Length: 296
Ligand SMILES: [Zn+2]
Ligand SMILES: [Zn+2]
Image (tube, rainbow, N blue to C red; front, top):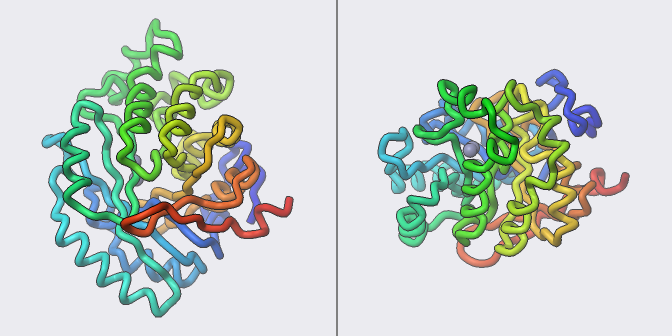
């Protein structure tokens, strides 16, 4: 399914967006994350049914003790994951032990220490809306009022730059998901007119050799476009970006691999022939983008 409407930002019915026959979805949450109830075997079964060959389960970890995924049970997570991986391998589905870190620059040393002490196959670094953030629903209108777009994005984008420069992550998750929290005060169209705002972020990714995730969760949200948009991914490539990753960021069964075709198409259209990944200790690996996305 190549859905031009998806790429151009017009939401299509959820039922039309269930991707099939893809090599990898590298951003998924199970019931090991506070905000998901999905048992890992549900994703295994969906992957087998739809021909999604490989998954990275990237449950959350937060370093703010007030958050719900503070200090998760690493041992339990790993046991559950490795056991599921053994169950699903005979069905043609490889399951990897990933992690999504809620990056906060003022907690970088704790994050570094955790990643030094715990081995994951693949690690996403994401900037989320923190408890004290100006983007919290109760504060965002007041924060936006009277500020320029440069000032509005600064608290989030400066953290993204720090995450990219930290050297801690394989990829940066949902680069500009702040678009979601700024609706309706700032629209995706306003972001599209200010691609210059992304230059420091993309340059930090290029300099650090870090991946840029094309996250399709925005396609099921009011934003109606990926995080980040196709234009930003194309600019990343122009600047010398070498690694893109692709994930649905599912927290429910119906979100599994949702819109993932669009992420592959955006990556291919930007000039990438491969999706970047890592499978444990050592160097990143390349997952070839299927021909159907490249032959256009
Ligand atoms: Zn996230
Ligand atoms: Zn996530």
